[in-house]
Image 1 (tube, protein in one colour):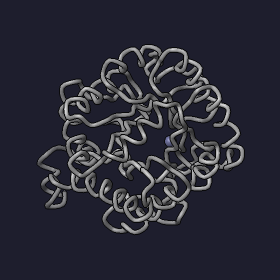
Image 2 (image 1 turned 120 degrees about the horizontal axis):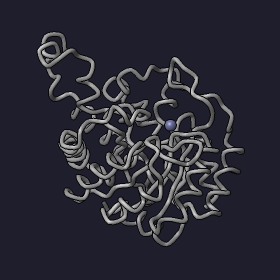
Image 3 (image 1 turned 180 degrees about the vertical axis):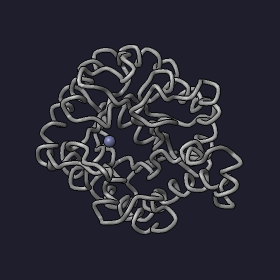
Image 4 (image 1 turned 60 degrees about the horizontal axis):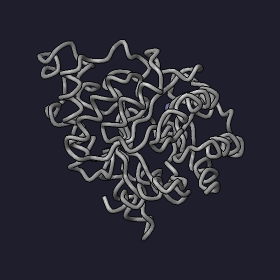
Length: 303
Ligand SMILES: [Zn+2]
C-alpha cells in the first residue's frame, strides 16, 4: 500500500505513471506455452518477466492472472458432478491458489529489484466471461459474489490495487468497483473500446465515467485494442472525466491460434503514438498484447 500511495500521488499531480506490458504474449514469445499461466510450473520465468518490466521503468506491474478465476476453470466441466469426477482433487481451492500465486510472484519480483523506487503490484482481473463478449456476462448477483471472492483473494495475497481490464460493459465495471470499494482495495478500470471509441455494448465512455466517478475508482483506462481504436476512445473519454486517464494498446493484429500479435508497432513507433496521448492528457501509459519490456522502456523515456 505504501508503494501505491506514492504512485497515486504522482498520478494525481499529473505526472506520467508507467504501467508494465504484456505477460501472456511475452511468455509465448519466450517459447513457453501459456497453458497454466506457468505460475506453479515455471515461477522463475514469470518472475523474470516482472523484473524485466520493473527494470524497463514500470511504476505498476500487473499480475499474470488473465481470466484466472473460479468461473473460467469450472466452465471446462459439464456440471459440478462432472467436475468432481474428472477434475483434480484440489479443484475447489485451485482458482484462488493460482490467483494468490500470481500476486506473490509479482511481489517477489518487486522486492528483488525495485529497491527504494515505489513499484505497485496490481492484480490483473478481467471480465468473468470472455472479455470481448458482453452478451455472455453473468447476472449481477452472481457477478458480485464472484468479484468479491476474487478481490478478497488478491487483497489477502498482498496486491496494492486491482487493475480491472478489458472490461466490456458499464454494469460489470460497476459491480467490480463496488466490491473493491467495499473491501477498501484501490481500483483502476480499463475498458476495451471499438473503432468508434464506444464500449462493446454500445455504451459510451462518457456514461462509464459518470457511473464510476462516485464509486471511488482511482483511474479510467483503455486497453486491448489497436492504437487507432484506443485513440478514438481517448477522444471520447478525456473531455468527460476529472479522473486520471490511461491507455495501453496492442502492437498489431491478433495472430491465432496462439494469443500472439503481429508486430506493427515496434517500440519506436509505439512511443511516438503514446507520446501524443500523453500530450492530450493521458497520465498512465503501458502495453497490452504483444508489447515487450522494450516497449515499456520506450514509454518510460517520455517521463
Ligand atoms: Zn490486449
